[in-house]
Amino acid sequence: KKKILLFADVGIDDIVALIYGYLSDDIELVGVVADYGNVPRKRAIQTANYLMTYVPEGKKFPIIGGAEIPMTAQEPTYYPEIHGEYGLGPIIPDKLIDTTENFFEIVNIIQQYDGELTIVSIGRLTSLATMYILYPGLMDTVKDVYVMGGAFWVPGNVTAVSEANFYSDPVAARLVMNYGKNLTIIPLNVTDYSIVTPEMVDYIDSKGRTELLKPLLDYYYSFYKKRNPEIQGSPVHDAITMMAPLFEDMFTFRELPVFIVTTEGRINQGQSITDIRPYTKFGEDAKKHRIAFGFDYNKFYRRFMSVMTGE
Ligand code: BDR
Ligand code: CA
Image 1 (cartoon, rainbow, N blue to C red):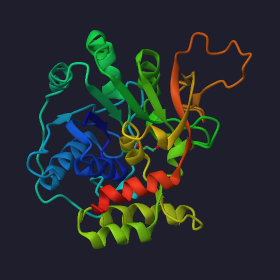
Image 2 (image 1 turned 60 degrees about the vertical axis):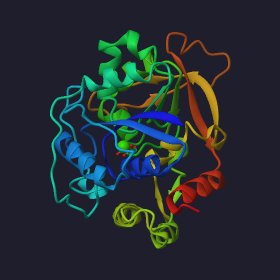
Image 3 (image 1 turned 120 degrees about the vertical axis):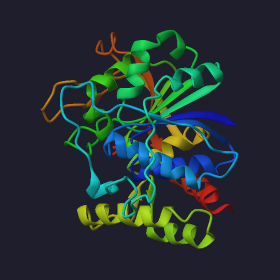
Image 4 (image 1 turned 90 degrees about the vertical axis):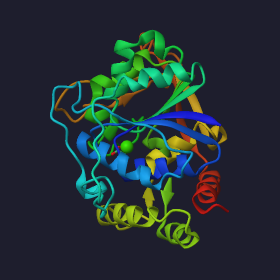
């Protein structure tokens, strides 16, 4: 079983990733760090706590309060029109439980799973960057890191060139790129194709394994459909990132230098740049990471459906 510590900004696709994580027999979730991002930090924490009521006994894990604001000097922007007020689409949690300041728990978790821990980051990178600043030695003991973020020479989803997780705190994203080891990036290049259609949602719902998925993905889909009437379903960026450590064969990767634009307030804030020219000098001082460029939809479809339906 993969032992996964998740850093999430607890929006709809984050929650789909979380559901995948606790339903899968191949994943052991050992903690969730709830960060500002899709929703404010307080709500991200309350929602993560609320979700624990759905997690089966024996699979429960601690919820850790993450970052409130980015390292980049700007106020966060939240996205209720995509994710709902609490990141749960139309659902408002009936019990609001706050986790108080327990960020140090991350240190205990990394120590406890010494050398065996995979970190999956599916939100803004502020909390994770803090770990590299404060605990460089400890971070060396993490087995590998998977990051949902970036758009490499394809359109962004916040600006023409920037993806939301990198755009919202480019300083943190750059730190993680500069100091991260054994790091794999799952960018929009592949996640934009991880489409879940309304037919898939209805089929999953009919199997009764997860009652949460339908209200969440119906809400999420209505946003995407309004924005682009041609679209057949909605992309579950964070869910395929959660699946990535299990299914390397779902992607094609290239090891390339990664550079994040940290300029504030411009169209290219948070842009992720790589260099695919074979003769280049660019990138000699930028660290190389594994970037997913290709994606096998059929493999995704089978594996996603199998965990969500139990079939
Ligand atoms: C990413 O940004 C967040 O809003 C989503 O949850 C996902 O992690 C997509 O750009
Ligand atoms: Ca997210």
